[in-house]
Length: 206
Ligand SMILES: [Zn+2]
Image (cartoon, rainbow, N blue to C red; front, side):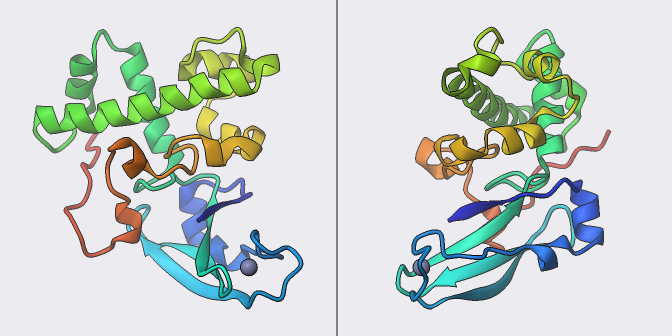
């Protein structure tokens, strides 16, 4: 189970400061009263950004691990939310998905790029649409697009800020912003937890 690690660092700062060492989870989320054999459970590695580790806890009674994901990182996708935001933002500004993919110059063939980009755009726009309904006082008048949310919030980086202000709703939002596993939507598998499997994701070469 993924839990939010409230953290204002960028991905690079998180790695450089080894900030997973400061992550803490005072109580078992399933058994706040304790007595369940709740204990720290080391860390696991993510490939992107290189050197990333995620702190983990384990509840013996619930047979459940809890991973503390910092606000800068995508859930169940490699890399940072800023990287996802750059891709989705470029599609919003482009004439078409295809032209955005040409601009992104990803190191894979176009059909693969289209699928890779479309999944990110759909997941983020679905999250924004859900948040319009969950937080109408803030977002009712916004188009479910990053540029509209950026204008409403007065920030450049929307997704890490949404991790903060939409924190209670993260279990109801799809990854990579929220914590609903992508495979439930037929999306990409969570390579961040399946280290040996599959090729690395496409790389931005701009
Ligand atoms: Zn527990």
